[in-house]
Length: 143
Image (tube, rainbow, N blue to C red):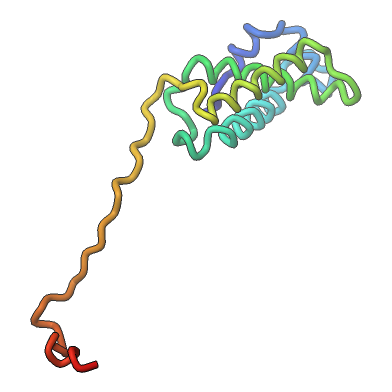
């Protein structure tokens, strides 16, 4: 399951734009495989930034991450069509999303999710007892 879905993308960009960005065959419908590939690419970018600080994939998905996913997915869809220069607004949304991911990664922005507990400090325990000793303190004293 992705951090965003086709409904989220439809709320962000028009249906006509989504069709235009995914339909390479000219059949005038959304190519869900291409849309899902863009969502998966966005998820990988998000997970790359969050891995180490949070357990990924995030479940449930915070609204902030859903919005970031929509912006990165939209960027990935436009990137397929505009190989030389993307629309400035799409580039800006992507740049803002990555900036926000960096802030989450650094801890400046905190997600409203449970953070995994840090491991407890370890201690050394042995499996030997005093009766397991081959050399007593007195024997080793001369060395």
